[in-house]
Length: 235
Ligand code: ADE
Image: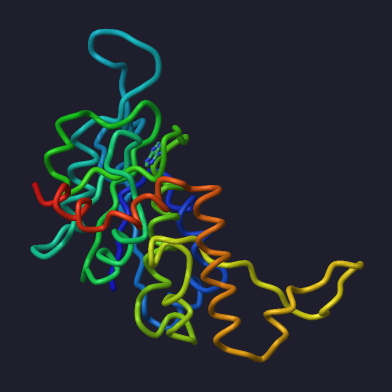
């Protein structure tokens, strides 16, 4: 899969995505990551990319033209363009699965107070990673690219690592333990040491449900009314 980021700060994306599993996925060709910097598409001597907001207010706004040109450089016919903004649709695991199947994604990362609104219609999707405001879209792009890349078939050595994990079934994953069986007086739950697969599966399911009910009750509620939820989404 090919991903391009339109960003004033490519290093904010390139550096974190050079390590660990995504770094390896890039080296092995599962993910091709490129950058297009609006500053490279300016024409004035100071390479200006932002200006004061019309109507007044604090902060600076990224100008439309350099962003437009940077986007034009990387956008192809089959590209899916995502504008990262705290005002967008909330990112989740389901969307990560959808995006992992796309051929070419382009992320537009705003910085400062945001981008001139006239850029918004150029995006196929406005996307937020949560209800908080970051310094720019770059850390959000890192999050989305990371979540997506690990779902590309072949990236994780064990394919089933993404089958039973948190959110896949609308539940949080059960806790994990490894050796030693007793660590500083704390024991691993006996069920996990039993060697009885049925017992282990039952324990994990109960733990998942209890954990989800405690920390994410809205996910647990969703589990009990899947049919009504599906209808509501279709409307
Ligand atoms: N830019 C600033 N905050 C953001 C957020 N929460 N999600 C996506 N892009 C952002």
